[in-house]
Structure formats: C-alpha cells, structure tokens
Length: 328
Image 1: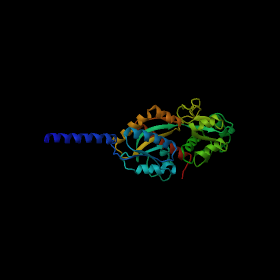
Image 2: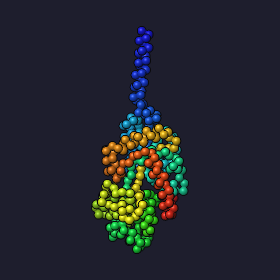
Image 3: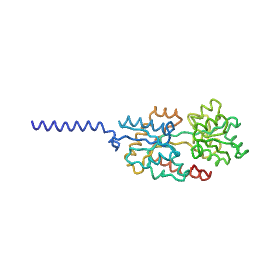
Image 4: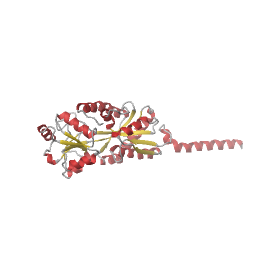
C-alpha cells in the first residue's frame, strides 16, 4: 500500500510538471519568463513601424502563447521612445521596432542619449519601403533629366516639400541635390498630410514620398512620379525607373525597418526572436499584408541589420554635414 501511495505521488508530480510545462513551455523555450513582451514603437499609431509591430506582436503571441503588446512612445523624431528602449532591462521583454531614422538622428540632433551601435543588439531587418520622387504637373517636367535641367536653369527657385527637417524624405532630397549638383528650396511641414496636400494642389513642386502613397495621386493626375529611390524597380510600380537608371548613380534611399533589443540581451534570446520573425515574414499572408502598405518583407540574420546600420550611419552623417542640416 505504501509503495502504491509513493507511485501515485510520483505520478501526480510528473503530471503536474507536464501540465506546467504545457502552460509556460513556449515562454521558457525562448529563455523568457511568462511576463508580457512589449514591442516599443517610437512613433505614433498608423506609421510604418507601428503597423509592422502590430503584425509581429499578434504572430508572436499566437506562436508562444504569451502576452505581447505594442506601446507607442512618440516624440523628437523617434528619440524619446528609442532612448526608453535603450534603457530597458536586457531580458528580451522589451524590443524596439523602428525605421532608419534611428541611425540618422545621431547626426541631426545635438543631444541623443543612445548610440545605434552600442546601445542595441540587432535582431532582424523586417521590411523595406521605397520612396518615389514626384513633381506637380504644373512644373512642366516629365523626366528626372527634365527636373535637373529645370533646377539648373533656376537655382533655388523650385521648391520641394518634406514632412519635416531631418526626416528620411528631407535627407533623400538633399542627397539628390548633392548628387545632381542642383539647388532646390526646402519647405518643411509638420507631418506628411500637409505636405502631400500642397504637393497635390501645386503649392509645392516636388517631394520624395512613399511609393504606395504616390501611386493613387499619380493615377488621378495630381502628381507625376519621375523615379524611385531604391536600388531596383519596385513591384508596385514596375514601369517607373530608378534614379540610378535615370542617370543618378549610387542612389539608394529605401526606408528600412528593423527590430532591436537593448544591449547585453543574451544571444540565445536574440536568436530565438530572429528565428520567429523570419518564420512570420515568410508567411504569404504576412507578405501580402505588408505589400498593401507599400512594404516588402525582408528577414535574414541579425548581421544583415547590423550591416545596414554600419553602412547608413556614416552615409547619412555625410549628407547631414555636406548639406548643413540640423533638426534642432
């Protein structure tokens, strides 16, 4: 009888352990506790990083059976939320989902309390979004060469819009100006809505804007798309040439989006996240959802995102210096 009692006791412990493993197993398998995972987005809801974060959050929640939330901490072109992510405990429960302004801001702002290389560990590049160079029809140009010719004929007269000083759209146009040796007048706005409205209305003449935003305006005849700023033509607009094809060599101003963890996050946790994000980004449904937002799913090892950061930091720092741009 005593032997049966011990056997039942051992069996009960084994069953309880198995049940507990079934509950916390997914979290424990990632080297995490069962606490909520937070994807911190340093921009407002509805932006590219926010949309990506919400897709990733739901997919991770389903796979790991663990609470995952998206928290928006906007302000100072992403600096406020980025600084908060840099100071988070490096245990895998707080990740940063951001765009390449992350590496631009250290050159634009006099005081940035994070270092893209030292304050974070790259996890994965998750998507890219192409920018299109567009003009209003009243400008009277239909090709990139025509825009360059018009700008050289009237230095500083043709104006262009951006969502604000130091934004990727602003820096893309400044790089175009430097590369093409032309002078355009910058008209900064406090966001994309006003800039797009005035471009479509002919109050400003040119702008870099996301391809998926530009296409409906071009189809209705409100703007003309001259080229895309990516290395290759984009699926959404296969007939639109790249700036390189139009004679502006070495021009690549894609918006890239990535996920990072605070520095000193264990490699095992980084690798687990990288694996699950790559699985998510390989899904046709996810790729389709991103394409509708003008984004192309990427994925790849952490080293891929690290290489992007290492390349873009010095590149945009040079543009900021050569064009004498400050954001504050």
